[in-house]
Image (cartoon, helix red, strand yellow):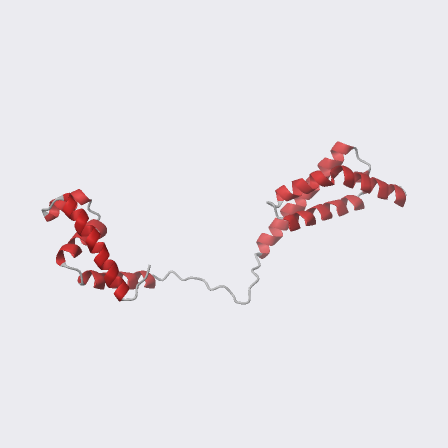
Length: 170
């Protein structure tokens, strides 16, 4: 096949399939236009190198192009996921779950609870720390459910103020 004939077949292949190939590549790359352009370009380059593709009928040429594009996208995804490069001027710090933050928070809350009135402290201990319902807490304290709700509301406000005084913010 002559060079002029190959060029004509390549132009025809491009005119007939480039739009569909672009749409498919965009789908394969989840809308990443740059990666989709790379996939289309590499696919058409491989088609140009394989003269048998240029001679195929319309349906089989498109099937070949789509198959190659899919393989290129998968290969690109695999190599990117294997590298998983992060471009930054500082390496990321890894969080270490050693329980220190939780222990400090518990200590701050315990100290703040100690500063509350006896009634506020006991309602918070029953409802929040021991898991009693409002009805159960009311029965244990010998007060109405509305009283437990009211005490809980004011106890939480008082606790928040004590924690804010200690520099704890939300």
